[in-house]
Length: 307
Image 1: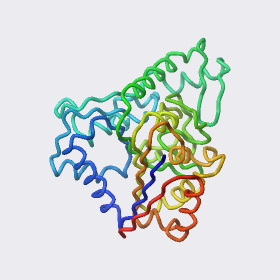
Image 2: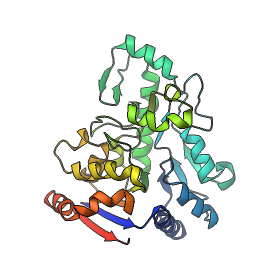
Image 3: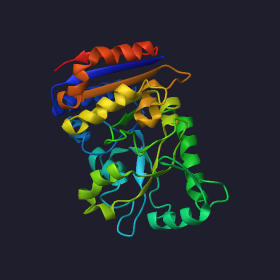
Image 4: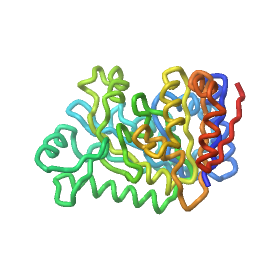
């Protein structure tokens, strides 16, 4: 059974406190050992609060959700990588005792992948690049299979996700159309996502075109609980589309978040959504319709409006 809870809060700081309070409770209870954090601007206030509270993160194991692949001007060790983001905002891992399972952004450069794709004849399904065993990209495939096996063995307690931009609101780098059965693998980063990163990289041409990402299948079947968090008007339309198309038969063609909300696993699943008023402004107007859609699909959907 999927148990979906939606909490609406007044503003970004209230969302951050809501998440920080939950994280603190789990850490003090010892019920959180393995965590997949997301990066970007949304979770920063939460991690600032965690630092202010001096919460003990020692013994926590982190697994990366996604990573950008290297370009001639960028590598997975520089300040724009998601690995660097985790080190900066969650703490110097060597000092806190946190263990990090990294997605290797230096496996191959974007330029090399472009060249291989022209000669290898690999299959592409939306954002997903399917690599054959005899492909020159096979090293990436082997790494991703090993990472997927790690997820299977560890069964992380919690994964934290943001919401990608329109027209295809997505989780991690599962941009464009991502099949529901996609696992950790090579992804093509869509134009909207690259545009969102353009300023940080000093121009669109500098943003990596490829990345590695955990897939929807693993997030549904291997992870015990999922957070989805968004705050600000930039997320109003993406949140609306992601939640309202999640119950469609072809939901994964509208948003890779859809299957995460409705995908059926052998275990009970908790999906905890937290939005501020700006991100939820369209949902609030149609909340009864939304609840009926999920209930008709046999899902538990609970709403708490704290705004």
